[in-house]
Amino acid sequence: MQTEAGQELQAIVDRKELERSAGGGVFCWGVGNAPSRSIPGLARDGVDVDVVFSIMKSRPKAVDVAPSHLRIWRSFFDHSGQEQPLPPASLITSRADVGLRTRNVHYALMCQSDQQLSLGDFGPFDPSAYRNVSDTGGAVGASQVTAILRRVSGEAHATAYKVNLRAKLGQGYWVRLGDALDLSAERRSLLEGVLANLRSVTPREWLRMVSDLRSGPSNTTGLQPRLF
Image 1 (cartoon, rainbow, N blue to C red):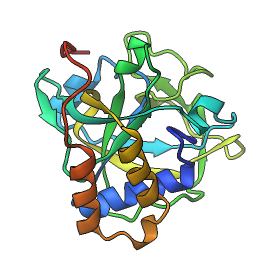
Image 2 (cartoon, rainbow, N blue to C red):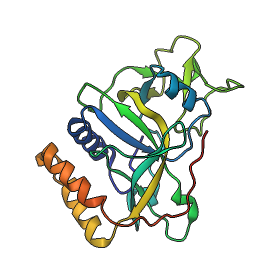
Image 3 (tube, helix red, strand yellow):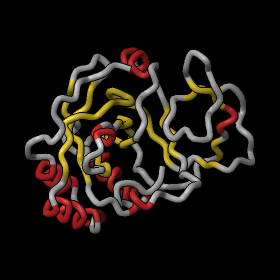
Image 4 (cartoon, helix red, strand yellow):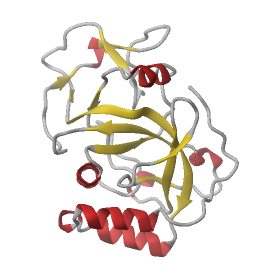
């Protein structure tokens, strides 16, 4: 995890904590890559899956620090391919690269936690102690950002990565998003004003603001659900 869609990491975690507290323990974390093919089966079976977040070592890209356009997402496709509205407290943003269809595709981890979200050092994370959940069971690649893994050995005490945030996967687990809405300058100003004062926003105020931001016609039509 790192700076994304013009928001620094600490501010993202503060926003997700507000989502969690306003949403009965549920929050959604946007990601750029598609789910593992194993996700639908895990979601159908209700398998208990930990979500472990680790701060990226590389610096965020300039386009993520200061995107020219922002987009919010209002629905997701569940493991059966049915489109569902995102939880009322969830606000998932991404940068919107004007004219590039590839940015019309975005994904999210559907998370839940009974504990307050805060960045910290919750122990080492050793990628070499895990393998990808796939037919080949390959090692964790250096370029992988989001992956579903299984432990195959103990973790080394000395590792470059730390566990900086924890949660569990919930409804849908890891999903493709839909019903996107590009933010106008007015709505982006509203969002940035709220994000600058998150500590003073109540859960009720947050729900109202999310509802206001998510209202309006979709700007992405013709996208079809896909199963992974």
